[in-house]
Image (cartoon, rainbow, N blue to C red; front, side, top):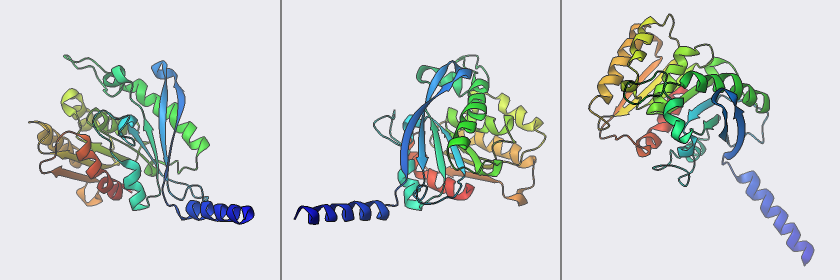
Length: 262
């Protein structure tokens, strides 16, 4: 009877494991000397990572506290893992936790006269020269630029767009949600002066976020499109009717952005 029970238990576990198509979310901590701290990283591995020998594209995202778990989020989660699981997506997502009171510094390229900030260069240096080499060495990744994306919302959208200007050889795709271009208007002149802009860009915001959100994003997408032929289909702009500046909007639109970018 005991042997029969053990055989049933083994059969159940094997059936459950093999039949599961859910991705895996885990965390680790890595030193960030550029920021004089350490960073907690959230890793989403696709449903077939453990059962294949494939290499996968990577999406780096900010504000990891809000991406996967409502318990760690400030105002709801993006449901990244659930969305990618439902799509059976074959992608690795690397979520970088923000620095709490240092979040504004990390995610803003230039100081704002009223709010300060302006330490994004160090933050991006950490991603490009510390985190990405670690990820590429320890996980099966496609390392070229067209398989390396970056994304976020609000200040995370701002710094994601800045990243593609500063490191065009690293990031070939970007998910720019509800970008806070108002915080650093220098971004417009940087775009005008960019020599090449071949990154695939998905811009998204809601029309109920702020008085200037839509017009600011329209202004940036216009500048981007002036730098390249629209026939290349490298820019997507989405304005969501009734969309507000919150995780609910970003969670609903994440899957659409993923499908278009990848």
